[in-house]
View 1 (cartoon, rainbow, N blue to C red):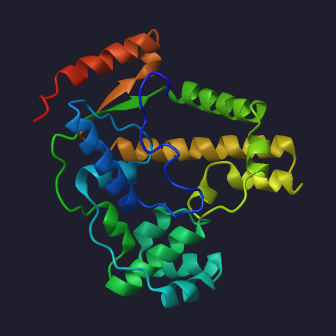
View 2 (tube, rainbow, N blue to C red):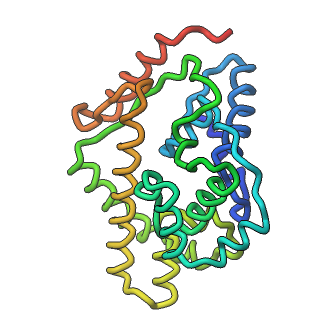
Length: 249
């Protein structure tokens, strides 16, 4: 971040709920401003739905019904999962069954439209226009090793104190990897060792889901970092790809 300006980092309060559509609006404005200065915007990150919402636009979804949401929020995870499996078997297999917010939203969409929420991941407003990119990969063993080391570094740099100091927090920020586990550690429900292992496992599982999503995107060219000699080689490879892009209009 010292070498290049980063946009949208820390721009949304932790109490505010975030969505792919909100991201699309904010990111589009930032990209327009960057392009206006004659510079090239590079979108970096690992949330596949957010990236595709930016390049393709999300299919329109029904507005939130406070009454329906309250009714669904009153149900248990078990009931919500059972209802979703009954109306959207495909989506029920892919959704995080412990994420009540996503389960409720999926059922809201089906109740209001009669169509499975999983369709939003296959129906888009328009085709991507010159939206090309690079899919950074690593060999699975190296990737998991780096994830484990990264979680250990988080604890060495005080992530427990950081979570303990957080006050009010919204539903989106509360889903950050490791947040629930560290809260459980602070409440003395699990040990430091259990907490570390749980975050490492959750992060590896998330990385696996990321790979599954991005490997289906045909506009991304894979680059296996495990096959390159160093970081500079990866930068050179990407810069060569960027130089082949058409000039900004």
